[in-house]
Length: 260
Length: 252
Image (cartoon, rainbow over all chains, first blue to last red; front, side, top):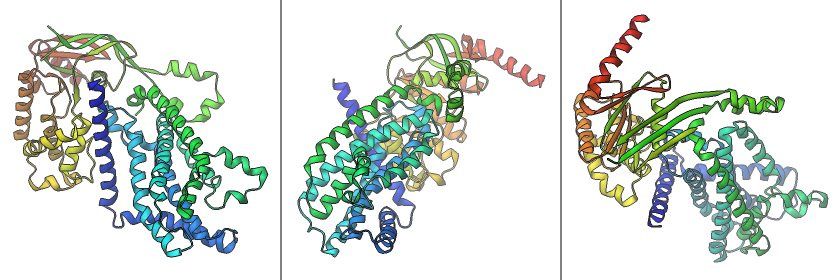
């Protein structure tokens, strides 16, 4: 028991060191560092606003804000899932030599991207304040944000475990992930509001576990409230995803060093 | 006499996964052949290897490239699992990482020490405590705060070895990492290895240098064609090994 706890504490230290490493590396050698994390969703926000807001005239109130509130959390999802397939390849040197529990790597990756997401939030808050149509900063942002952060962290860790382990054995998966992410983006109400979707296509949103998550983030940012109805089901789904991902990783982990 | 490492009839074969990984197409086109594919394409890295190493022994693994030495270290380290047979390891194992393997080129020497030492099993506080001694041993001067991409290979080796000096494994695996570094540094590495031996640490290392083996090891395991063909003292085995290698060279 004592041994188990000390091993857990060590894993925590390891994750901490690895996350610090990733963040330092990201910000050390790039001139714009932090601006890249912000620039990406802002840039896409501008493009989508121009195309869908100005050209196609999507009838959504506060469209620029609406877009950004979806794009910032989406950025966390996409940066995790697009790099997950390469995760173990990128760390092959340490996997082949040391026996740390492999789940440390997906956790590190999701946390690192989560920290970047947190770093970008002040910018989003600034937009909300400036636009004045959004809500005033409220306390709900803190606890609501923490809850959603937790749910998304669990969900992404599960998915990352699954994708990173399976890709070692089926390299084609990386291509599928790129395609899948694009599909998922359009199947998630980032560019449009769910009410705009015709009834016969609603099932698409109901199938997509990311749809309620993005909606919840937007609801929180724009209206300062957390809708409870989907939160529980999202939480349950995320935990199930994590269990599935972890089981797959655990089963395949003894073979990682062989295939790398 | 307690043994720290024991292998009982261990074989290790790798299914050649890349046949599967190379594309879903072949898999989809020939679903029936899948099983046969996996079964046929096996690469044997070790065959029926058994030995016992007692606590505090220092053992050299010799043999040609591809004979299975690194696979053996992988099995002892626990990163690989045997196909058949049993690997019993008692105690904390640490592998010396390949040159710079656990290092990130953009991080400074100091940051890399923290990373590497944690990977090798140290807790955060232990890393902080060990840091001065590690920096001391590495003797990198002001380079300790430079990113390691500007380091020479000798400096990288020094940094890697310096980290090892501060962890206390029961079994230390060294895979041809002593070949780099200048004479003075090698001398200090040997001193550290000696100190480890004096403390009762079991050493397992792959080496191609007969001199090193003479100086450090009390036992040699010789691998050829994925099998262990000899087990004995350096004095007995090394001449045979060198003869074999010379014959090989003159044949070519």
